[in-house]
Length: 316
Image (tube, rainbow, N blue to C red; front, side, top):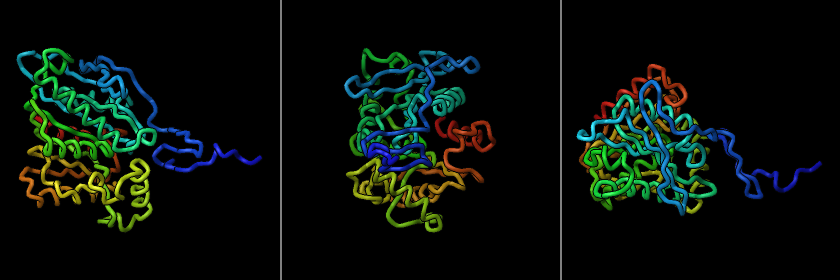
């Protein structure tokens, strides 16, 4: 029996965990699990979920270490999850477990942003949501009301952005927006980019010997951002952005993994940022023998623990 039109696949990103059918159905078969907020019995880290914008459904998960001294404010990390802009959420076990560990180790407060995902909400919606979340966070620097964990415990002179993969792409672009537009009441100290999902028309480094992987990366970008200017769009290839040097922080840590196709994009970003006239300090850490976002899937391995320590050190 012939399959119906509705069963025809128009976009197959099975390796990522996503298929889209001709009738518009989206089938996600990875990154769909969620866990509720909690108090971690071992570390005392608490989490809770907040709605930032009821109209769009933009929300976030907040994390706080053992209730701190209100007279000693803590650094704040705004985190953007990965998943190719189209799978995973801020409530995924991968991110919940990772951020629990990071909060406990670094003694920081975290806002993990649950932006809307493609293809139902194509880019630039994730960027718009993320900027709305950043501005919501910043509003607490002077507000009399609002979220108590932010209002009472955050040092707004010590704010950081971070993300992995697509989330690292968002973190860079939010940092650039801070540099271009400013962010009242907040000092963005630094950005941590973990295995950033960047690209470009011309292959660099190991992309030249992995053209299938390069093609997948480029196709995914156009899929999540149909109205983009191709792989050299400045949102995807930040080096092509004439405002690249306007990044609104004083330091950046780029983390890459030796076996990751995106590794050379991370190195390229570092080298070009140093040459751009930006004026800050950029560091790079490479995990030998590891692949893309290995630290989420194997958080207790030596390389994951070393990466965690480096991130903690960067923020403190």
